[in-house]
Image 1 (cartoon, rainbow, N blue to C red):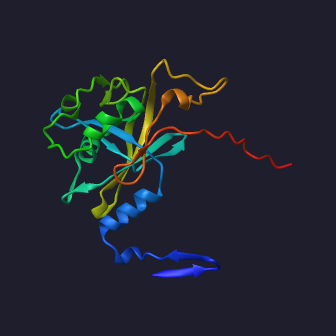
Image 2 (cartoon, rainbow, N blue to C red):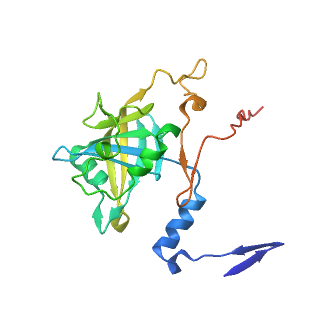
Length: 212
């Protein structure tokens, strides 16, 4: 359905009347760019798991909380969600330019007995504060304890993780006089719609306004 507002014409899409795939494509091509949470976990039998999720965001600073929305596969929880609920712990690795190809490989539908670290030849590190592995050559990692899980029904689960430690490569600097990580040194990758990703582009510096 098309409607006009003044000289502008709009297409109105009723989300109850389109397929789940259409809703997914609309959402992921409009909510952009999205940071990628590369989630690493242990299965209950010790198998390592690694998978990227772009429904990932910061939630709060005190306590430091992050969120990852993890969907179901064929009506069952994905390996990452099941492992987080079992172990109450996980790591979120921040994907950077040098890891984009291996990150993409780990998005494949591997069976639960497959170790994505081994399949993609990624080095394994063991978290200091939580019971989870991490990508050892990833320059920034959140070590998280499960804070809360919100059941999303058929959509899967929303996981809130309390960050117990932040692991940073010593080559990544801070902005002077702060704990602001230098994004130009981190070189993060973000997700767009479909198979599209974006790299760090122009950075605008806009000071917050002050009320006089």
